[in-house]
Image (cartoon, rainbow, N blue to C red):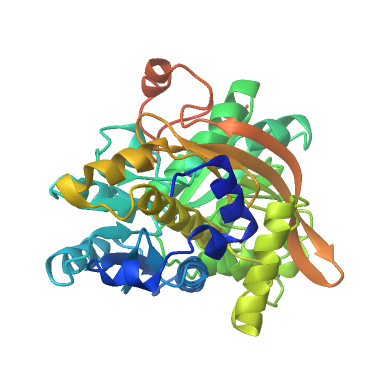
Amino acid sequence: MTFTRRTAMAWAMGTVAAVFALSDAMAQDQPPIRIGSITTLEGPFATGGQDAYRAMEMAFEAIDYTVGGREIQWIRESSNATPDVALARARKLIEQDEVDIIIGPLSGAEGIALRDYSRTLTGRTIINGSSGAADTTLRDPSSNFFRFNTEGTQWMAGLGTYAYEEMDSRHVALVAADYAFPYAQVFGFMHEYCELGGAVTKLWSPLNTTDFSSIIAQFPSDIDAVLLIQGGTDALAFLTQYAEVGGDLPIIGGSITADQTLLSARGPHQRLMEGMVAAGPIADLNEDPNWQDFVARYRERWGSEGFDSPSIHAVNYYTNTIAVLQALEEVGGDLSDDQAAFQAALAEIEFTAPTGANVRLDSNRQAISDIFLTRIVNDGGTMRTEAFGRTPDVTQTLGMDTEEFLALGSPSRDNPDCPPAL
């Protein structure tokens, strides 16, 4: 079957089974394609990792675990958001389970570790899950590592400008986890915010922090907002403790801050949530028909087992999975010649994501797609994120010339930096 624009629309609207209607006889003629996956099922992102696997399961079920005339065998693995564990799981999938393809991981530093591991492999391909560290694909990319989700720097497009111009914010306290993904998020925010004249006081914490009292005590007296680049239970712990001490400054969220782990929890943090602005690749309330359809299918499939709306990790894993399945269908399941045809098909695919955003890859095999500005609203008693702005076709260099952007240096705890607050 030739991949066409109609095929892409079928994926986006959930009619995958009709597009991939292949006979059982064809599937029995060839050995199965073994797809391994890694997501975080331990630690602060465990609920997001569980949701990622729900979305992958939806993608495989829609085609009855058959693509390009071959059966799919899916082998799941779990990490704890650390690169060492993710790497060990990837080696297990390749060396013991003999998978052809890996989809994953979830977190930033894990993604860099798997990118480096992919260079040691021949005839295997790794496709990202949801990890969003910038340098995974921006610097020294690997020819057999693909990422169809946008990354942390891209996800902040428009947010720094909104905070400065619309919120009149001039000095924010940054509360962020101290690892690769938040570095990318901070870079994306400060790239706009500092250029406009904003100041940032940086306060870093280890992943899995439970006590934020010492960080809250360091807030400068003249800040007018808190930039919170935390996710999962870390974000919940900070907001709970900040609310308990009477904190009342506006919260500007990172892309994984205002997600279902936070929105579905009950407690004092809810006082700070309504009105929180953020940016990222998804919003719970999005009028695009592709998103409406995806949410309806998600709720029908998972009911109370899932979230009220698919999480950012579910959407990213689903997006990367359907890219894999489309490429496999286009090449008729052919993984010969060290997967040359399959990888070439991956590099050229362009399709519509569940959010309604167009997805295509740049020369580093990194997604170019749309980013939403969001705010948390009380929707009939349920906290949800609502899209109120959209930046189309955000590149990894934020529209800058590649060499000029690379000259800014890699995101880190010290780069970039705003001028000191006056």
